[in-house]
Image (cartoon, rainbow, N blue to C red):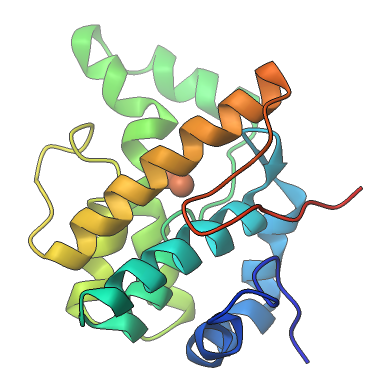
Length: 179
Ligand SMILES: [Fe+2]
Ligand SMILES: [Fe+2]
């Protein structure tokens, strides 16, 4: 049985039923070893996905695609420091900005999602546009705008929690963290 940080929430079981294959995938589980604003990137993805799913549900949107696309929005593995340095060194002028992870990771996450799972066009849009306006093209669907907004809001809350010992309240409830 899958137990995530949202298992006990009102729609937790329904949410998990849409995304169990992703949650159980050994490559996706690697995200547990990366920290994202002070919490596991795995937990960050689950939280963003659950809150987006609940909002999509209230608005009668494509809840399955929102759950899956949002869960995969940060499905990327950090490059070794040396490789990042090398990339920056070999890029000139203003273009250097485009080598930063904030710009590159939506494409990387979409490539990983396509490689390890079957994703539809909406899920692809959700993943690729979740950092807009850092990525130039805006989201094409309301579902993608929701994930974009939820991710920003949750990332800010995670930062407050990390730097200000602020209680970690997401849109739909308090997150459970390990330890
Ligand atoms: Fe991201
Ligand atoms: Fe994120």
